[in-house]
Length: 135
Image (cartoon, rainbow, N blue to C red; front, side, top):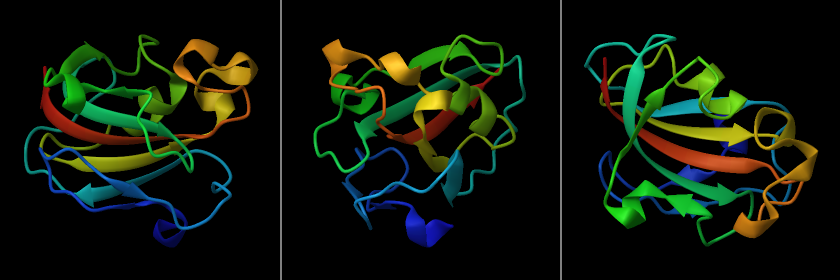
């Protein structure tokens, strides 16, 4: 699976760059742990603080990036406060981990997408997620 996923050439805490291996995204929801953290494990219902960088599969410019804002984001995980792809992939990983996640539309923003952010209804999203803390 890792060979179908984008290459991310940055360390935990650094703004990621993403290189896509193929024009077509892998099928389904995919997550690869690039760096395994040694902090507490994130559990459903926790409030997690992350840095993230989101691009449309094959794109270069992020549609959203807390790295670019220099401001991590905090929210409940596994409880419907974020897209399903996050709720299903972030829990179970430890603080200090870096993930790359490929999220098809049905786990992202659905068939409507988010046109104002440049996300079409059939776009697969890719997020690099650094888990900073959980409580």
